[in-house]
Length: 103
Image (tube, rainbow, N blue to C red; front, top):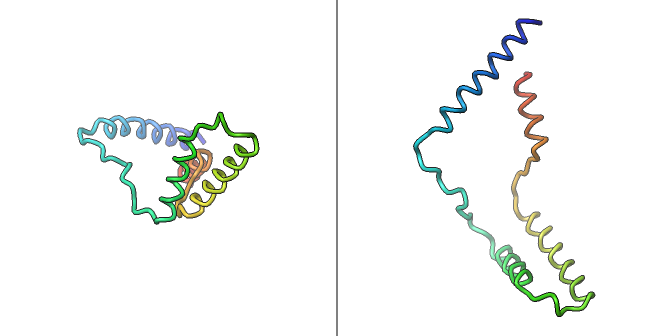
């Protein structure tokens, strides 16, 4: 039991030592905001969201604001469905890291 605790502590200390050298690299970070080719219908939906965001909603009636909210929600769900991305929560990442350490 003491050996496994010792090995685990040595492993965690080595991770801490290596992270400092990785963070000190002199390379400029590459921009991660390079947009991929978006389909035309997604671009149209995003443009509509920008139009709604730029609107002056103070003069609208309650029913009109409610309709806009429904439209925004529908557009967002449709864009997410077309995203084809893999999204992991912070909890899922922590669980995966713990499983990798244990196994």
